[in-house]
Every structure is written in C-alpha cells, then in structure tokens.
Image (cartoon, rainbow, N blue to C red; front, top):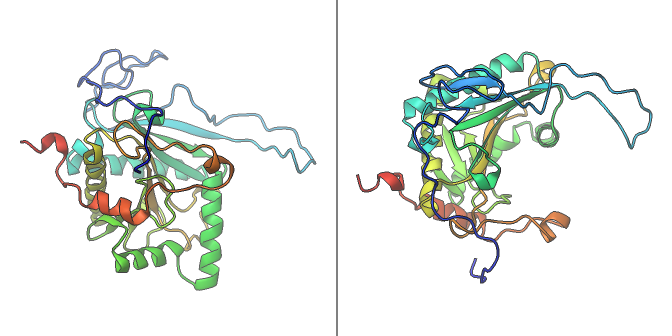
Length: 322
C-alpha cells in the first residue's frame, strides 16, 4: 500500500449525471435501440436485454466423442432490471423502502426464471472501470440451462463439506466470523457483511445470513427488510471510503433451480461484492502477472480491510453536511 505508484490512474470526479436523459435507453419513457418504448415507471423496471448473450432457442451442437472438445447447448435468457427511475440515484442513496422494492423484484424474477432454468444469476456492474456502459442504476439477470463454473465449484465444495460435517459450510463459517469479530464490516439482526478470509480484491466483502437459507426465494419479510438495510449499510461504507460513487461487480449466489431443485441443504444463499479500488479513487487493483499465472496476492490483509471499512461513517458523504 505504501509502494510508489506511477501506473494507470482513473478519473477523480464523479460524472455529472442528470436525473433524466432522453437519450439514455434505460430512462422512463425513452425509446430503446430496438424501437420499444420504456413505460413511465416509478419504481423498478425489467425487460429482456436488447442484445442478449444467451438465447432460449438455439440449435444443439453435433455429438462428439472427443473428451478434449466437448460441446453442449447453452440456452438462457438475459434481462435488464432498472432499480430506480432517476439516473443519478444509486443504491446507497435510495430509501430502505426503495431498496426493498429492488429485492422484491429480484425474488420475483428468481421465481419466474427458476422454474425453467438451472441457474439464475443476478449481478450488478457499477462504474465505468467495471465495464458498466450506462450510469442509470440497474443490474442484469441471466438465466441459464447449465450450471456456470463458479456455481459448479461452490456446489461441489459445499456438498463435500456437508457430507463430511453434516452442516452447511457457510453457516459454520459465519458462526466463526461472528465469534472472532475481526473481519466483520456491518451487521444487523439477520445479516452480516465480512471481508472473507480468502478475499482476493482489496475491499471484497460477502453478505451472509445469520439463519440458514438456501435461496433468495426462501427469505422471510423480516429478512428482506434487514437485507435492504444491510445493502444500504455496505454501499454507503464503500462510497465513503474514497468519497466517490464506488465501482464494483456484485451478485447473489444460492442453490440451483430448475431441474436441480433437489436436496440442496448444503447451499447457503449469499452475496459477493468485488470492488477494484485499492488505495484511492484513482488507483485500482490490477489482476495481472503473478496473479494471473500463479496465485492471487493481497495488498492488505482481510482484517485491515474490514477495520478500514468498519470505521467509516454510516452517513453518506454527500449528505454529511445536511
């Protein structure tokens, strides 16, 4: 963290994003590139991605017997979900009721898509340096007919632990983190946010339930309200770290759906935040060299990162003077 830096730096100021931009295809009432007109929505809004990476109807590949070149069809649906009608409002600036509306819509999508597809991935890319091409507050929802690599690895490891210990891995983990209290950033009656012991990104965090739930769709109303609170808490902390609208890639992982709706007691529903900023609003972490070819390395310990985040104000920096 003290090493002199003369490498790539990012812009220091948040862009001046208008509340409404008639040229922004995610704004209410605007015509999208495919000619469809968005409704004048006042809360959340979901639509099928105009440029999807997955399609529901694709031909099956030819059968092959070569183990080195195995092919299978990848079918699915890609959707975009707007969080709020205003382009200059992000999750940490939303009310708890508005965030709860986002959660309710996420769960609604999980229920719909999970009846047909084996995996439903909700994820948000926030900030230009994380590849986000539109500043309007939104996420994406990709449903796939297959279990993606990260989900498959988590499924295998959680199942192996459950068979050995008879308890879900992440519930044992969160119990130990609550006892240690060294990597916890924020918490409430239902959730805890930790910088995980195995974190790779400098200020990576994990959102974990204090009571065992397998899927997003398992949450009670109390857990949903508490999740809205925990999302606001951690995103405010992130923004306050360098006094910037903090970029990240985040997502939710839970037990598979569709044809894999079998015994999933080993799964624990959780969220992950992967933020790239390292030591300021202008210097980010680069995953290159040794980290790409050998193994990840941390620039500060998980305990140090948690302490830095934990000590930040609970009030958003843009509202601190009001």
